Image (cartoon, rainbow, N blue to C red; front, side, top):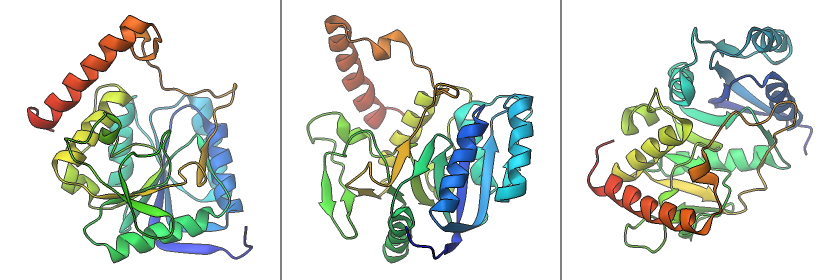
Length: 259
């Protein structure tokens, strides 16, 4: 990594947090080591336990961020909404607290900002995914345009929007709506994914999608996302039923439901 600090004067780093203050500290520390500086840093907290909030307030002495708190746990959707509401810059870099940047992070971010400035009809740049998006058209800097056609085979094409780390414009909520509140994180993400598709959102995807950031879950601060047995089961019959359900759910959402 270069020793020169790169200042992103039109980007706010927005971090969602819930009961993982040490993970938050690790992310902020690694961002600093990556020589990235932002116009603003917003930490949106979803009513964490007092010991975590106290720890975060101590962190503020070293990292200078704005802490947006909540009197009650509102879930992922509420946490994203109030975090976005606090942003004042043209661009938002969203990262969950359990990620850390890898080598050349600042270069990839700079290129992502450059793409959104050059292509004004694009809404976001994605830096991480569990799996590579299946339909891509190469652009530059290692980024590709994501292509969605409803008749393309498979369901992976629906994973066009994701809550994983991404860069987006400040008008994102005006264009695609606010995040769904009062439900699970999966349903919140699904709702925004469908809104993004139905409202013709456009995005870039970094093809080497696990080289920019890494997700780190320690035994002391494991993931706070929980999923039921139906979603995680490897039973053959459950898998078949789940696949049929997903096809029906995804296509009915795309054509019949409002978001």
